[in-house]
Length: 299
Image: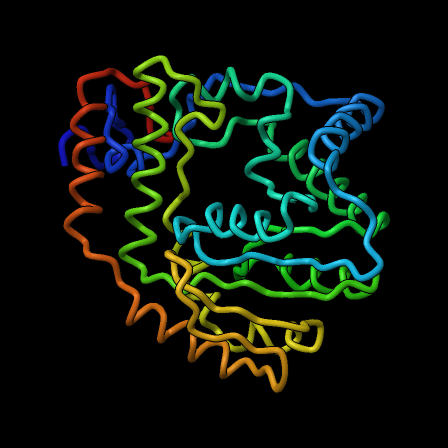
């Protein structure tokens, strides 16, 4: 592939997502300065004021946990669930919360494919604080979490919600690997296009390492990931990228039923690849006319 070499030689100038994924970014000059405890608390209060402004305390609150591999369409699902609450809910989404991190938006628009160094810790703090606020005030919540082999964040969110008297619903996106991979690629190229056109792009050109995507894809259909989770759930919905439902269970929920529905959805809900590829190809062709920041392999 053009611009990619073995050894320690890296990509000098590239606007292609496919090339950028081949190298590790060790020369990324961006950096978000860490915040002290008082500043983080003030930032959290700002986030709560903005994101929980329309949510009211509920006698019987509900928590919808949305999961699936990157590029599966979780943001769309989150928006649909929020609409069902008519906005009377708090959306807890780590990726969205990064926009509140001081300096993040400007740094993200620099065009580098990786997460802005230093932003993760602050965004996780905001995520935990916002979720805690929602639980303690019995606000309806839509929570985005990942099922993967590295942690048990879905289980932790479900347990915490249950302990606070919530009705807990797990919403799983059943999307085939090719479609979600295209989604990951297109998200990066679309963000890069906004940057190159000098449009407002608060997320910058966000890229997901493919090993993260593949891990989440495999873990989502692993029945062992649901064994401890099922007892904490009142409802499970397995749906496709366009909202088609493959499973809706409120009683007799089992890991095998969940995984069977995920596999059904992945096999029957495949998108026509040509339009997806044509969209991606158009974005790549546009971005190829611009020079990205220089990237080099680690030495």
